[in-house]
Length: 410
Image (cartoon, rainbow, N blue to C red):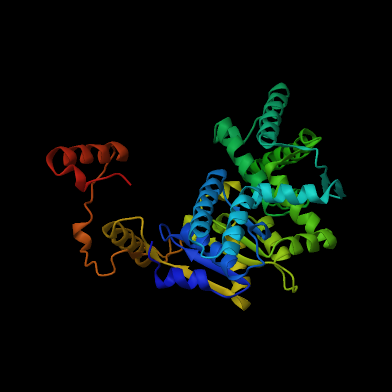
């Protein structure tokens, strides 16, 4: 793969803090891989075990490991000296034991290093199991018990006048998740909400009262279900709070890693972003930081992703670091890139008061492509019928009557 000027600038950038705003299909994983290899090449004393490389999913971890393995293998085979060959062979063998993982596994490793720990709102032991369903279990059991109580006492439920039970469960789950991942004190928030709810009109007051009652019960029940265990959200929360409280542990982590790499940072949470700022602070031996993210691709708000946290990190890095951009889309055809840019540009101009989005137009891979928007789009008028069915019918007609290679589903 031949590098563009943008990609080369990212790989060769010299700063302790770097944020790369990488749009879809711009080669961010390739750039991330090459930067890691180049750093190892340039510093004979540096090892991949001194890097924490954090991805968003287990699948992304496996893909990045595979790419690094191929790159290290190529370096080993092409080295001209025996010393260099031994070094890259050693790095290749160390790859499986290096810190390449999801943020949750990274936090679990730090917590294990901290050992048994107790704070006012943190109780951790390395022997605790990590459970993935305790929050949903707490919500389901609380709602079932709460509904039964209401029926037995013949109390009406305001929420059920406007929504089914499963919708109430979704609202409760979202509210509880937001309270936890934004670092808010749940009891304080609920107490204040209860106080101000008394000023609302009757229906709104009843709705808020019911939701507060349910959230209080979920919070207590969830705590009981986590006896001798943790849930996924606890890993980030506890790790941040322990590092903030224990300067000795923080210094140990800072000295362990020389570089922190984080991919898909647009899906960061408050605890993750604050933890990054703690580890990569202004101290002399703090690790260098390299983040890759794109706000337009943030899709995990329901799991605690916080756009405000990303924006604050961008401002923090911009003060004394570098904010770089990858904008050429290599994955999609030029006509598709032109189409997307044109549609969102129209929305920005005509619907600025109705929509909030982050538009950073991508460049097509063929810089000389002179594409007429009218030739890359065809609008299908859809009234009451299913949009999916309408598109399927259109594709079937085109595939039957035209060249099949001209059309594809994206």
